Image (cartoon, rainbow, N blue to C red; front, side):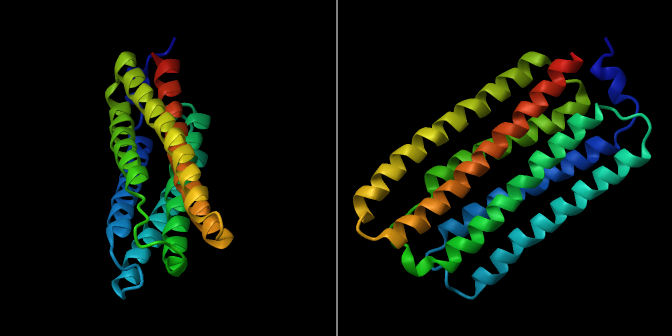
Length: 216
């Protein structure tokens, strides 16, 4: 079996691009945290904050396109082509989801309670973003399988925590604003976007784990 170490010796450009992609995702999560902490989502500076989400999504698109171009031009790749494409696609979907969340949470601020908090979800996303970045940046260093397995298990545990949180928040939502269907719909849509983003992180981590497992 070809070892990951031999594969890594061939070309680093794909690892450079994947790491850049992971960095953009991490910046996006930090931007999300700052956005939901804002006490007034209708203030003028919100426009510039939303633009940061748009910029990250554009950067992710550019990196994903560059990875596709390099795959077309490169005969020998350090990892299997399908794995590179799958990981690139999984990372791209994260800023895309968070961009939608940012746009909707500001557009429908008038329908949201002042006391509504997305902090529990953003705490999970922050931890997942940190772990995901560590996993991707370790790929070029021939990571030990047990280390990656532990990180992947952590991502799975965080995803399970997100599922439990979603159920609890949905129950609370229907109890507190069940007579206001529009508000219920808007908040549930925002919850869904954050849960979907958590799932995207889990998917990306599973791909990294599969790559290391396949080449160990």
